[in-house]
Length: 390
Ligand SMILES: [Zn+2]
Image 1 (cartoon, rainbow, N blue to C red):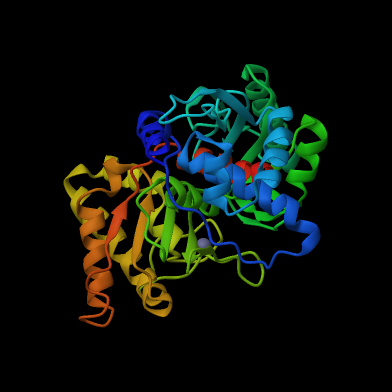
Image 2 (cartoon, rainbow, N blue to C red):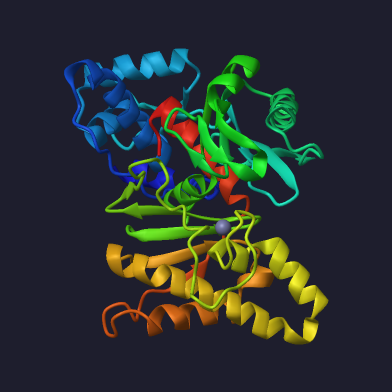
């Protein structure tokens, strides 16, 4: 155990990228026919989060038999997912054990973020979470379903060409309401309605593709690699506003895959800016990034007032959600130059002013520290689907 602990310390730096964070709670019971996949996931999950160890350590850590471990490890070595990294220095007599680990450089994963205000961005990462190369492409001038799709395919192909190892899969974080099979029910900014993005990309790229909502991807990155607590809401603010929610260690999906779609909730009864949806005073109309940048640039002397007003609207909008779900924290993912300071202070004040004193007064609203949070979250969805690692 001691040297396995030592190994983890030695690996510490490597694990910084995709840290030794938490795993999501599994929701389903395991049926006998699923046992092998479940055990494989347990083995990979353990190695992924704990680092290199011997087969004997792995059996002890997972509670699986030595025979099962040998079998699963052999299979994963054949797949190139696990590799033997050498012999550990013997602590006592007997044959020194061979240590194994996830081959973090043996495969690569592509993550793509479709939520940017003016461009699609994507990166190739290794399994250790290091970004190896990034590309972006401007949103197409002609904003119809096929032009948008073509821009995504071209970006994905460019990234796949840049990969230097076999690609495990492509993860996509898209704005809008996304069904569990990766069909975009509605993403008005991208002109997609009932658009089978995951199926078409899978066919066109010849790779496994996972499509999910951008905020739901972001909250996975925050939960798995960030400092998140177990009941939280993450609000993505960019061209639009969307949220992901994790309660009891499980992502909230909702009855129509739209949990967290808070952008078009009207905040207040006093009017407000015109929203892209046609209504007046939606949360998204108040706090989207292009609007705040334009307004603060046009009237720099009113910058504090504009940001405080937007922050207050956000606090008003989330107060009921924080209280209803008893959330531990709210995380904002958006540009710090806009949201750090006046905006966050106003949002926090509005939240605390509108919720039960002494119960919710300690619920913080903080900024995520993660860069490329949607890209990294999209990569997490691929690791979860392909390796059972989350
Ligand atoms: Zn709206």
